[in-house]
Length: 228
Image (cartoon, rainbow, N blue to C red; front, side, top):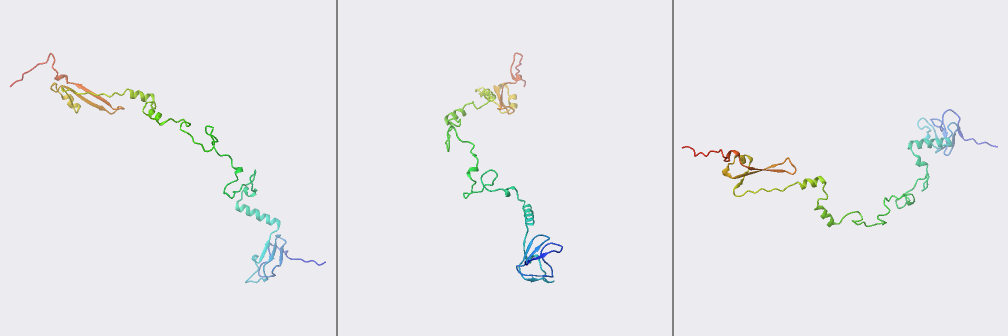
């Protein structure tokens, strides 16, 4: 029985026949017994110094071990995660796919609605102001005009505010400064002066009323006709 042996590497090294010596035929198989891969020549060619045989002259087929090693190297280089090992689907441990509508399957979307009913109403409901605990405009306006929205301290302060008015009769005059007030004599009648103290909240109005005691006649006063 005849035996057919294909061209094979038995020398040191790995890979197909390359270099400036040797001849290959198109479609000729070469087996690398060291590296374990199969090579098929692409064309007739004789290697020379100017045009040597090269790995590009062959189609390479990896054996099982080399193919797995190459794939593992590629997976590492691409940094593929665990999702690349999962099947598609909608069950536990699978990767869901976007549907034709551009959305995920509704069966795997959880109920994200935070409210399922409002005052026993469901769906698109209309909530009234009273259902939200609100008041009518009339009630609100009445509240605004009252002091219910004030604190006890604020009510006390307002209650202690006095609106004071002091008027002068025909026998009295108001002065524009405190200096003038102190300089008035009895001929000016009863003298008044108002001072506003802004260190108080609200501002404090201080009224001065009276005359300098030195210009008032007493039982010990002397009426002098003067000299000439």
